[in-house]
Structure formats: C-alpha cells, structure tokens
Amino acid sequence: MKILSMILLFIIQLQATNLLQEAIDNAAEGSLLELPEGVYKGNIIIDKPLIIDGKNQKAIIEGDGNGTVITITSSFVTIKNLTIRGSGAQHERVDAGVRLKKLNHSKVLNNKIVDVLFGIDLDEVDNCDVSNNYITSKPFSLGMRGDAIRLWYSNDNILKKNYVTKSRDFVVWYSHGNLIEGNYGEHCRYSLHFMYTGKNIVKNNVYKHNSVGIFFMYSQDTIATGNVIENSLGTTGLGIGLKDVTNYTIKDNTMIYCARGLYIDRSPFQPDTHNYIENNRLLYNSEAVHFHSLSIANIFKNNIIKGNIENIINDSYNTKIEENIWDGNYWDNYEGFDKNGDNIGDTPHTEHYYADKLWLFNPSLKFFYGSPIISIINFLAKLAPISEPVELAKDKHPKMNIGEIL
Image 1: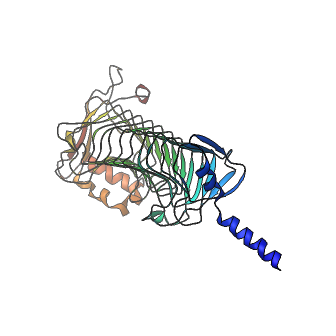
Image 2 (image 1 turned 90 degrees about the vertical axis):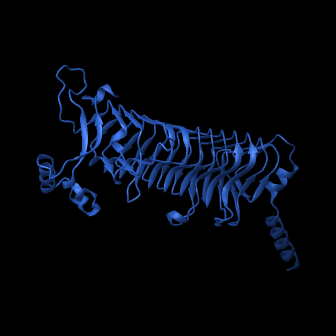
Image 3 (image 1 turned 180 degrees about the horizontal axis):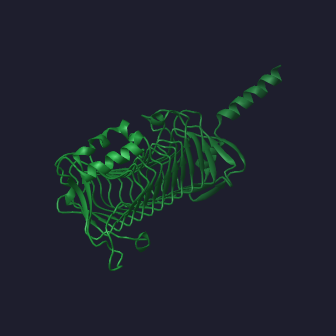
C-alpha cells in the first residue's frame, strides 16, 4: 500500500512538472528543440531565440483550458509543425493558441491550432512570418468565438496560406505594411477586417460562406487584388466593403453569389482623392454595387457586371453618387449597339433609379424577383415611368464583349 502511494505521488509530481518548459528554460539561445511524437504540457513561455519543431504535427502542445497555450516574448523564435490545442475561453485575456508580444523576426509555420479561443495573436509585432497554419476556434456561437488571427499595432508581417474555418474574424487593427496572401477562410464572420491601417497588400485570398468577405474601415493606401469572395449572404452579407477609406486599389477580384458584391460607404474619405476599382468581376450577386452615404470620386474601369439582380443600389438621398467615374465596364443589361465593331457601345450605358421601383427596397418583395409578374412591372416602369428617373451611373464607353476585359 505504501509503495502504491509513492508511485501515485511520483505520477502526480511528474504531471505537475512541465518538461517542455524546463527544456526551453535550460536551452541555450538559438537551440533547436525537436519534439518526438507525444503530448506536452502547454501554457509555456518562450523568452529566448530558439526553434521548436514538432515534426509532422505529431507533437501536441496542450493547454490546461486556462490562458494561452504558447506565449512568445522574444524575437527570432520559430515554432513549426506542431499541434496546439486547449486554450482558455476568456476574451478579456485574449486566451489564444499562440501569442506573440512586443517582438520581431519570429515565425509561426505549419501548425494545427484547434480548440482555442483566439488562434494566433500578434501584439506589437513586426517583420514576422505566420504561414501555412490550420486554425479553428472553440465550438461557441459565432460572435463568442475568438479571432483566428489578430494583428494589433503590428507592421510589415507576412500572413500567407493560412486555412481558417469556424472561427470569428481575421482582424488587422492599427497595423501597416502587411502582406496577406493566399489565405483561405470559411464559415466565419469577417474573413478579413481592417481598421485604421495603411499600405497593406491583400492578394489571392479565397473566402467562402462567411458573413463578410473583406471589410476595410478608416484606412488608406492599400491594394486588394486577385481575391475571390463567394457566398457572403444574409442581412450583413457583402464581398468587399469600403468605409471611410482613401487611395485604395481594388483590382482583379471576384465577388460572386453575395448579398452585396461591393459596398461603398463615404469613400474616398479624404477630399480630392480617388479609389480605383478596376478589372473586377461582380457576378450573380443580389446587388453588384451598394452605395451608402456620400461616396464620390471612385473610378470604376473595366469591371464585369453580370447576372446581378440589381447592378447599383443607392440607399441614401442627395449623395451625388452619379459623380463617380465609370468607363469601359461590361454591363449585361446594356441595350446599345456596336456598329463599327470596336467592342465599345455606340451610346453610353446609364443606370437609373425609377420612382416606380420603390418596391425594390422592400427586402420581403425580393423573394419574387424573376417571377413573370415582377418582370412585367419592371418593364412597365421603364416604358412609362411616372416621374423623371434618377441617374445612378453613366458609362460613356461600355464594353460589348467580356473577352476584351479578361
């Protein structure tokens, strides 16, 4: 009985000992710790330059359900090929799988991060590489999950080829000069959300079945190119949103099967500036472009606008949206001709809003879009409007053939 008690005491003491933390504490700076397959106690702190390699994600670092699993406070740290799981669930503490704090030149690569509140948290972190990670949150309701990746005052980082599913948001706040490329996100709230940022590049990401694709707010000098946003549905659903942003380039993106393809709110924000919206594909959305509040001086060129229920919606009065510049776009509802065969319509394409079509703004009536009676009413509203229609957009050189744009 005494021997059994001693064995149990030894097991309890061994479980209480964090062997991985001891190895980190005893390692020389710059060491490589290769972890064999197994489960290691988490809630570790890495406070010196070193590399931890889990080899094919078979080394599992498991938190105790309270706090952050791995906290990194030193520059020149690499953690890779690990499975990381079991963070706490406190939002005020930002409980996470991995947290990097006030450092630079570190890497988080090819890890599987599951059953965590926040995935990877970068807090005042510069020149780091966060790539090829799989991230999913705890099985909470959407608003109660943490963010898959969170940047806070973090600049010049690479965030590339991360796979995010069933998390909340991927957020970039007060952070500049970051490259966000080749990521995939699904079944989240905001696939990508920017606030008070500048000079970021958002490139070749794919976002499907999220509430919102990419939303830029209170920011400037950013390029979004080659992204695909699909099936952003619901009352808040949109592909790409611009709110109070200036000097943006939105180019070569595809917004398809969304409630709103492109949402523009008081942008560009600074006077005498432009946003450049070029070569995008706005396809089969409920609304291709939705304007809210005063939004003028956006330049729309060489976009494909096809298969949408409504091409342009303006939900505010006296906002002068006709002062946006449209040139060389393809409109599938253009009714003109091209006599000289130069692929440019002989007459401008104009989008109008008719007083007879006030019913379009009643969401419940949109259920009947495409029905014969609605098609007849729509035709009669154009044929014999009861008032002067309001111009929403005029494209002086509409394209006749999509191939010339592609």
